[in-house]
Length: 237
Image (cartoon, rainbow, N blue to C red; front, side):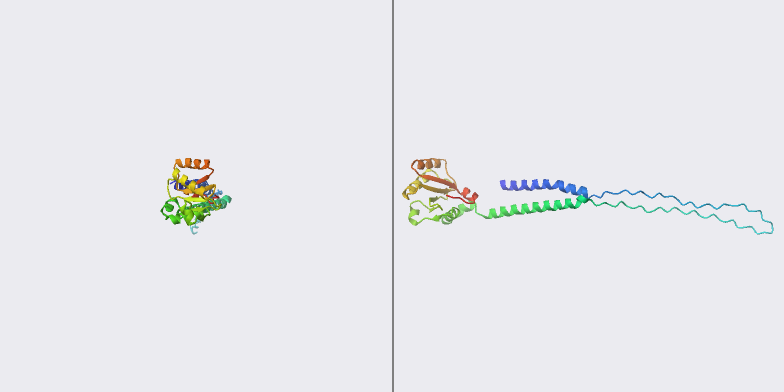
């Protein structure tokens, strides 16, 4: 539940960061019209024919034809041009920023989902609880870079040894109490060691009292949980 909430929060924050870039790019992509002066339409005036008075013809003369006035040409209005958008210098750079931000978000989300998928496929407490005891002990030894114990040591309460040679007790149990700590302390003393490590899914409150009592006897017992082994990359014990 916590992981899903964190993933949603990260995607939301990244989405909020991209919105200003998208708005800025949209504003800059709108063309700014350039106003051009419209041509003034002035009609070309054609001079009207001047009518000169004609002399009254004699009865024998034919009447002269009166010239008809020429039609005035209609003024032709020049075609108006539409405003041409001027390219914005910041438009290309804004789109590049958006593509970079989008690519970064996609890369981050893909990497996060891949990490969660690998982590989900990897071991967890639920899967480790279902393992047989032999496989469970082998997994703990591998995480601690330890080695398995002999049959005699196993019968004495020691399941293996750490990379430093300390006795190791592995409990596939959710609650390990003071009684288990006392028994392991006795096994450590028989092996003539001074320190030991016990691993379990969890420890009860009285397990601390068993650790303190073992320390009074000169023995140092380190208690590790399975979750600590899962979270840590490498432990030196």
